[in-house]
Image (cartoon, rainbow, N blue to C red):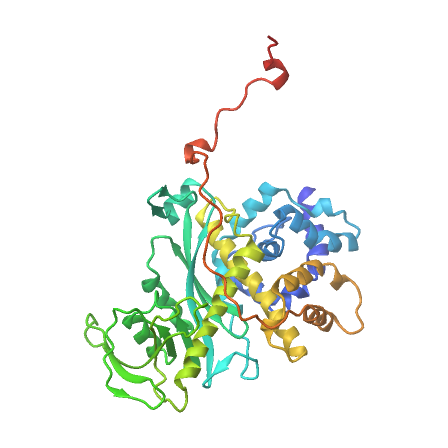
Length: 458
């Protein structure tokens, strides 16, 4: 009798789930196709079918302050009421949701990310193309995860002079379209993984219309040769130890040089012609004032890409830092580690977070295009709030349609052009005076008697 009741609720409520906030850019048909390809479909009728769990994993990152069961109520409450079913009959408790997440696994979310998250801008989008190339940036970050034995064994911890880090950490590498900015490729590895080695896997997403920018911590001859092998161009900052002897000087102040990969495998190219731009900053108030900075690029024609334009374009790489800040500070809440106690759940969380960010950024891009504005001029925080608060709206009628209404609301929250300012990388919070908490301290002995029974008057 119970299974029949669940089947009836599934048949009635599940097709009525209206979520154009997500399905506009992550179609339901694509999600179902991914579930079939990954073999993640449920074997029997459940309160939490695989499609609903996948949606829940993504939408939860619009509600970082809330619990999973609360987010599920937000999703299924109105569809259940529309067919005369109390939401509590359709909802599940926390343990059931957790079990459903692990039953789904990380592979469907990873495949979904790779299928839907792609560059979205056109040459008409402000700040998206330079020198006829799409601007993308490559960088990495470190995230904390829940302190469990399995997470610590898989991801590892960072170590310094004070000891091991309080939480296990993972390393993420992102490839970001600067004009959107949208993350369209990513990799997740243990903390000990080398960024310079694993970032080469992200080169698979480059094409001949791409100009990829990277900081000097990621630059290597092998990586730059890999960029060129995929037909893309690069603009990278390099360290002082790199020897770049001028072969010929150009009219714009740059010069041509050649880089050599001495450890190149047999049969692979080991010489890379580059153009070098050396510059300083003539402003005592800016970091790096008076220092010599060096950029190298595969754009060898000074007529196509003048030296000053290259220097100014390289500063667009900062868009990837803004994107990481959006993920950590405003969407995920960086003071909290990823919640999952097992590595598969952590990886699932990361890919779901990236898809949720992709959807918000797509709405911002469409809203900016509707009012002929640079996407940088729209507030990410307000766009996140608008999408989050609009979950019940599709169940009401809009004469103009839901898409124009949501775009207009997102476009309303404009921010001024960015000020000419900097923020030093300083930390105000000092080290704690309390002893460090170790894994053995997570479950200390608990009182055996109620407090009143322990009181002894003297």
